[in-house]
Image (cartoon, rainbow, N blue to C red; front, side, top):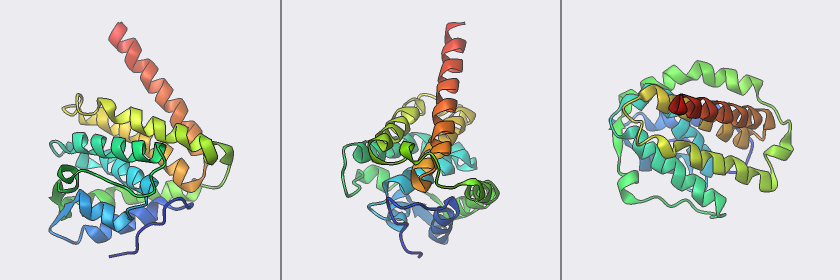
Length: 199
């Protein structure tokens, strides 16, 4: 298994996918296995990893969007309050799925992951450093709250997961442009959803 992804340092999405693919060599992979592979202090990589997996066909596995929402919310909340060590309840850590499906999902994500890595750079770092990071974690906490109610609509979960992934990647790579894009798209999606509900 590859070394855990270092928390709090600029990184690449492909690094995280490589770590997840290494874990996928097992017949079944638990959330605990993924967290261990990424590192118990890797708050941002864990959020990003779960979000990108929910963009993939894995979002169609029953109950996985709900478990993912709980996981992202718990990790983001702990990052918000400044914990230095990740804690997750046993029922989340024990949730597992076939390693073959994880491997397939990672293959599906490799090309978009490469595109993201090629276009990332340090810019607008004010949005990605210091107190401004709390805004990113708060957004990552709020966006998945509706996923358990919308689990029967995988596309909706994937849209929300894409927003979380944009924001989490911006935090990981210290790229404020990804953060800004994530914030703008989140507001746009929220406004569109509100309009459709009220129409």
